[in-house]
Length: 262
Ligand SMILES: [Zn+2]
Image (cartoon, rainbow, N blue to C red; front, side):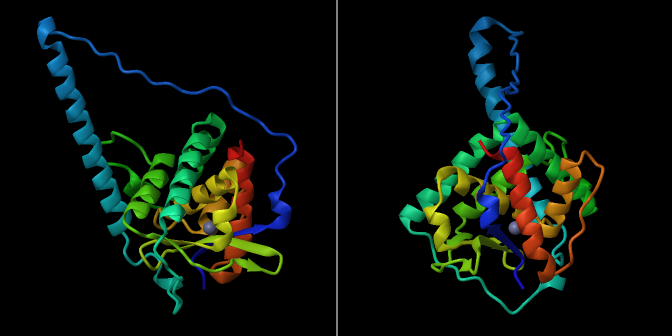
């Protein structure tokens, strides 16, 4: 059984006719005030910045520890005797993977996409019943799109994003990538992924990045996406196990496309 698959039906390749684009961008600014003598201001500010960076890194480390260790038995019921093909990325493939995630980050700068993904992550955590476990101890930042982004980049840096070396085409469906929750959330991209446009590769990267968060399988994510999309009016249920993976994965792609396509 596949843990999580990106299955894109060809009919889903069409973008919604009415595209919406949010142009507003949020900007946060920190006002610095120097209270001491002016000649010490620069030093103080540099030291403050370093302290801020150190605190941020510590918070990231704590979040990662919680995400990866809090519930080690999460996917036992899905354990299967099946291994993803995992080849180390070539230099060109790694560049493609990184460019796709850079593009995904740009898409996430759009408020419409960012708000949807943030709400999706929060709802999925609620459904999994572990929202509290995903919040940093010092409360310096929440559990949102940045969590998925950072975990996916971490997976790339640690060699857990791989290439299958195989085609993902099966009948009319194409599986671009697969994440294996039973094996350190490794991602395996099929050949077709490396032929996608920048935007398509970005949308699929976003999908797999969400799977980097423990418990966030296709059923959980697609159900949460339906909840957010309907403003809390409904939550689609999917069959557990293999039967529910493909329909949930397709629906999740539809939602991601609806809110995050440029
Ligand atoms: Zn998936």
